[in-house]
Amino acid sequence: MNLTKNHEIVGRSEWIKIREEYLKKEKAMTKGRDKLAAQIREMPWVKLEKKYTFQTSEGQKSFADLFDEKSQLVVYHFMFAPGWEEGCKNCSFWADNFGLALPYHLPHRDVSFKVISRAPLKEIETYKRRMGWNFGWVSSNGSDFNIDLRVSDGKDEESPGMSIFYREKEDIYQTYFTTGRGLEVLNPTYGILDLVPKGRDEAKLEFTMDWVKRYDEYSK
Image 1 (tube, helix red, strand yellow):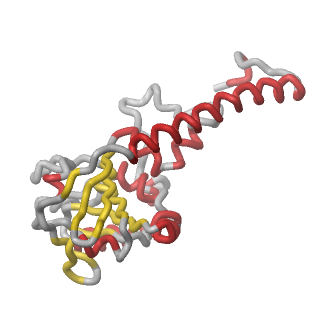
Image 2 (image 1 turned 180 degrees about the horizontal axis):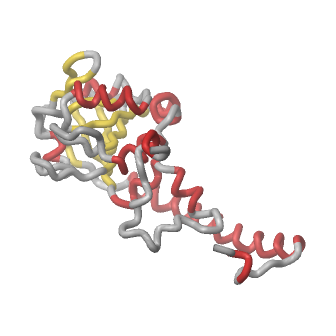
Image 3 (image 1 turned 90 degrees about the vertical axis):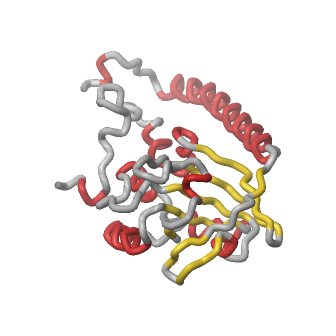
């Protein structure tokens, strides 16, 4: 594809003027996002009434334990049901972006980060080792957590999502949930693709993320 054939080409000085106009729009969008985020933080909360237990590399833990003595917890709901040979490839694409920022930097803002799936812990840890990830990933197997949070039907239907919780003493509240494109806040790869000349380049694919593979499968 030759993009220069039908794309306007201008001199440097004119390009700078045009760029400055788009910068104004970008700043307006950023301020709009800040305003929306503030409104989201003002949303009503819902108290979790049920007690949940999770299987972790350090043994069984309560949901409160997952806060790691922080008052705020971000949970990524990773699609990985019992019996699956591998975790979801799209969730794996997201997880590749978690890196060091979420497990290491968030705690310094009083925020813990955990990934939760219904698969048994043994299956999770096997896949985690394969992918070389270092974030906290626990199993909710045997509890209703994923069903109650509406990211699983308890059988084979799974949905991705991000939930945020706040803890005050023994009380835990869910403050936010998002899914679909709302999860892009966790995936800077798409943010970069939006700015390159070809964009996401997904229009001709059977579905938008048809190009995505687990990172160790691209060379196969």
